[in-house]
Length: 170
Image (cartoon, rainbow, N blue to C red; front, side):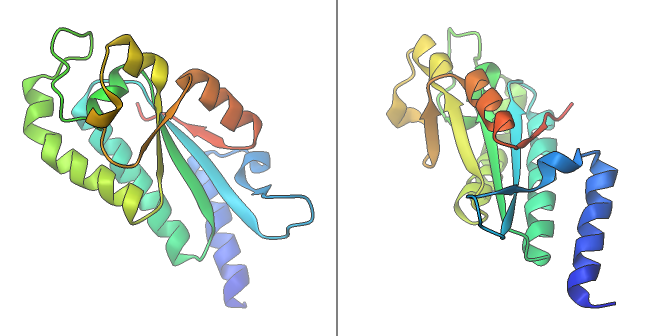
């Protein structure tokens, strides 16, 4: 069997294992463009650093697979509410999202992994500006590479309507 057919078979098996609906796996960039791009949005609205670590592992595994199989991808993380904790070194004291010992202990590791996903593997980081402005966090206090979107949940809905597969780590 030719290698490109084997690669497609591997990808489809992974898609079935992950439970992705076929219609969301591939979306063309523009009409007439035959090069498909896998589009995925991860939703980060939780406070647990272990859960965030699991999400980073999942994303790293995904993009590494795509890179190894020469599959183009657009993977994004949209941060809402408690997810803001993972995008700044500010302890967010006196906010609903304040840091705790578990996060403080893991912050350096999580930042390094998140930063590598963004800068090396091209994973886009998008933060709900309603969350940020609601607690008065200056934009300059966010990690490099974080883009603000007016509303995180609106952004997720928009991306899903454009064919992005939605993933939320439990």
